[in-house]
Image (tube, rainbow, N blue to C red; front, side):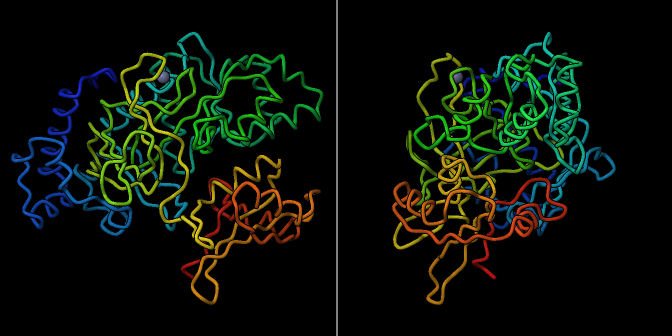
Length: 424
Ligand SMILES: [Zn+2]
């Protein structure tokens, strides 16, 4: 079994891993060989983080367009072929060999440990393990490494989820937070005593449980009002192949410094200060098949440098407040779709999508399309959002079936709430 060191490694030990990663990429990745050559970068001359930051960032477009150039091992070595979720454009192919699958297992093992899961617990995975989804497999492999009990129910099917909870008594679920609301609804309709079930905690993916002030988001509050369980936020992506996980204090997600080097870059291109928002740029460490260096994730989040109450040495990141490309500028106010979503969650409305377009003058314009079945009147929603966001947004009612079509496009692994039509 490979030794991935520990999340408690020192700064110097992490630097050694970065250097080793640079050497590996420069010898094995056709893409980075070319980048270093074009930019006259001598790897052996990189002595510190300031030198490291002179390496150009890698973009999602490069990963998409020159996909196979990123492959640093023989194609026949690849075991798992997956794709990114494709929230912004086409999904990107990603590949893992034996060593990467071991790393993925170790990564999730550490993530589950941060959330307090032990080998004595049973965990029910309510996300898909297939559909080219890396995370589903990662959960399974991580729990297997931990030695915990695993129930693979897959996504959807609230009836099967409750039947499995009754049969196998899981202490934890892995779930998308909004799916927990569906589970609660189903339990209420079918007289299931969900408040006294075996479930004590949920490892959550995909939706933020904190707002920018590191307070509980409307979604977390709503779930916990209905069901007294502990929710752990996690943040991850296919390209990072690394999870960032909340500890029991729920104030930002811990970084695993032995598996990933993170930078948070502000608008001027400098490292964001403590508490400031910037774009997360990552260098996943100890990856073999598709090593990335300074990969710009497009995710905007807060840099948290001060130590956590839990005593872990690792730094944390705040919740994703938006994607760089999704930033909306409306009448001089900048905001992200997540701000609108947070407002809609607070209003307890889930049947809606957000559409962004350019108006005739090239300015951003936003329309929130809600199902006609929503009981709150559009004018009232508009007023409440205006108080929260300081801008007046257009609200339009559409039929429930049209909304469903737009929100769940065929072949999507998750609902699409934000529809960016600005470049069309
Ligand atoms: Zn902590």
